[in-house]
Structures are given as structure tokens and as C-alpha cells.
Amino acid sequence: MSDALTSALRHAVYRLLRPLVRILLRHGMAYGTFAELARKAYTDEGLRHLKALGKRPSISAVSALTGLTRKEARRVHDLDLEADSDRTHRYNRAIRVVSGWLVDPRFHDDRGEPAALPLEGPRSFALLVKDYSGDIPPSAMLTILEASNTATLADDHVLLRERAYLPTQTPVEHIEILGKDVGELVGTIGHNINSEKGRRVFQRKVSNSSVRASALPAFRALSTEQSQALLETYHRWLSEHQVDPDEDERARYVAVGIYYYDDEIDEEPAS
Image (cartoon, rainbow, N blue to C red):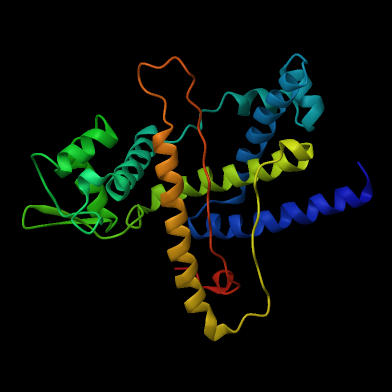
């Protein structure tokens, strides 16, 4: 590896770690825990890397590749760090329910907007949850959506308050979103770095370092409105191309993410 590439990697990793460490410190994760996770990530990715190269993915080979001792590599590889699958399950199903409410005309009013849904009956909240979340009871889904201020119950009807599900009242789920969404973005960037031009996927951003501070609220509102509309368009297209239960075709996972950033975000005090 050239000195220039080594230097670029060091700077890239440091810039990536700074906001991550900021979050870890706010939530009380000490360096020792982070270091343990880094050792496990090196071990698990090392095994995957060796397998992709057609080599035998052994602990000894990982030790040589990563610089970890065989004892360390074996120990951290055996650690079970799987997140609570129930929280992830509820998060994914809540997104599907809100998305279905936004795009399925059965659950719209005369203006084509998400309707206030009765709890039971035809075109009801219970039917929405049944069609888009499967095995989660409507009462449990309502609790999830109310806790995040995404929906509210009034006069035996459920009203959609926000056009996207974000578990603002459930910080553990916020952290799980961090791992999933940032992991997907880093995976996309890594794919594009290592792929030929024809195999790269879309990865773009627009930025400007000379915008008037007074104009940022208007741009933030504009970007929120147009980004939400674009995501709803994508959701409708993906919903129309889902694998039916009786199809033999393999189902694939796909995601497109949009984020907003300005330089005051990093300056906000820890809450």
C-alpha cells in the first residue's frame, strides 16, 4: 500500500470515527467496549474476505491477515453480538404500515391523502396493519406509532401525524437505525471504490459551503418536502415489484437513503 493511500485511509477512518465516537460517548460506551467490537469486526470480515478470495477461512489465516493473535480472533469470533431481533422486526413493520397508509388508495380520503381510519371494519386501521405488517396485532402497532408521535387515536379513529416513521421516543431503536443505515452507506461507498465503472451504483450528494445562514430553514423545508415525495415514489414502484408468495423468483433486499446535513449539526451540544 502506498504512503498516499495509507494517509488517505487514516484520515478517512478518523473523520468517520469522530461523529461515531461522539454518539458512543453520549451513551456511555467506553473505549474498551469499542475496541472489543473492532476486534470482532476485523475477525468476521477477515473470514468473509478470505472466503471471497477462494481461500480457507481459518482462524490462523485471519490472525495473519488482521494482526490479531489466534486466541483473540477465536474468542471474539465466538461472541454473540446479535441485536434484539424483536425491536428490528417492529421497526421494519412500522415502516411498512406507514408506507402502505401513504400509497394505498384503500386507506385514503376523497383528496387522496391518508385518511383517519376506524379501528375495525373495512378500510380500517386493523386491515391496514393486517395487510402491511402481517403478524403484529393492531393494538401493538398503534402503541408503536403513538409512542413515536407518528399516529394518534381520536374518536375511535387513527390519524397519521407524520409521513415517515421515526421512533423518536425509543432511543434504542434510534441506535439500531444508526447501525443499519450507516452500514449500508459505507457498504455502498466500499462497493463503488472496488468496482469497475459499469458495476458502480448511484452515490451522489449536493453541497455548498457559501449558503446564507438565513436561507437554511427554507432549504431544509424544501429538501424535506421533495425528498419525502421522492421516497414515496420509490416505495410505490418497489411495492409493485414485490415477489408474490406463490412465486419461485428469489426476493432481494434494496434500499435508497437520503439525508440532510449542515455544519451546525456537529456543533449542537450533547443532550
